[in-house]
Length: 136
Length: 124
Image (cartoon, rainbow over all chains, first blue to last red; front, top):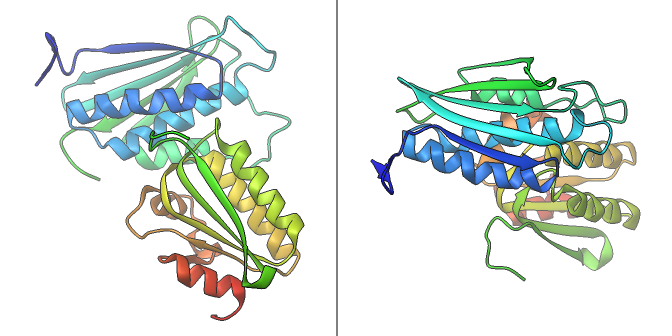
């Protein structure tokens, strides 16, 4: 399957501002890619929504108009790999949060595997793997 | 008004002669739209009476909406008031409740009318 002249599984990148509206922007971007490469769309949309929400809520304790959340999607064999990177302070507990931390457990529920690491630019990168070719 | 099915919208009405509130939400609930949802829940809590929350037309919800539902549920519980939720069995929202491990803590119904009857106290 091809999209335009590009293979459907060509790696994609999307840069988003640090804004609550970026959560809704990320979902169809990742969901459409999941459809193209045979990964479970609903799971992918929930995971990307949680990961971007975490960035917006936790990674920029000070307003940062130049902050960027970077999404990457690529295929490796039978796996769809999504990465969500912030250039803020990474994943830290929000002292004003409610303590109802459902985000990462939900990501764990819908992914084959996920991880949170320090990003080279200072923030965090959340990597999430989904199996292609089956409906969960 | 928009034709975008992802656009969040909320309907709010008093039912059962004012003894209950019916909130109907559709579209998608996430960090960008949850404040509007929270405002409706807060309004229902301040109103008195019970609450039926119709989520059968909701396409998507993440933990932002889940958190709002739980906070509201605890508030109604504390006050000894009923809160009932209608959500279709095969929807992503139902799956969200299930994966979060809170399915058994909330009165979930597959049909709006059943949630409404429970909230109104005409069904157990």
